[in-house]
Amino acid sequence: MTQSPGKRLEAYTLKRPQEVLIVTAEIEGTEDQVLIYKGFSSSLRQGTAFDPDIPILPDTAQILTIDRIASPYTPDKPQYIEQGLTWEQMQPLFLQVGV
Image 1 (cartoon, rainbow, N blue to C red):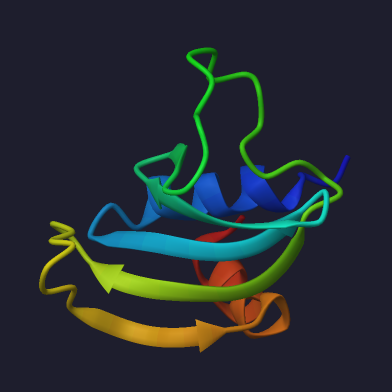
Image 2: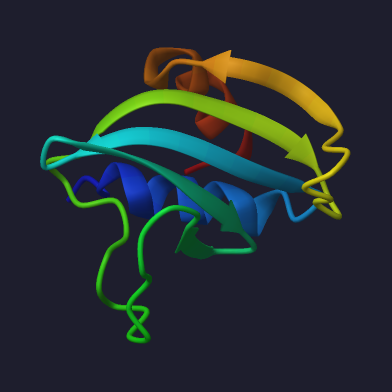
């Protein structure tokens, strides 16, 4: 069974704990930014459910861009590894870590 995009991104950050992902996505017609770190997701613009089984990025989300940032994440001075990646550009990175 194929993992949802949100679950794949969370799995990626478990394999690369030195990275934080900031995902810009359109969810049900609303743009949101989601921070993903060490397997957990949190919305930066909306409320986040307390239940980690409720996906922040549903299967219907359209991922617009993904930024890779060095951990620890400092909102004032983020240290970007790469910015503006597309979902397609993330595929080789998923393969590198086996997710």
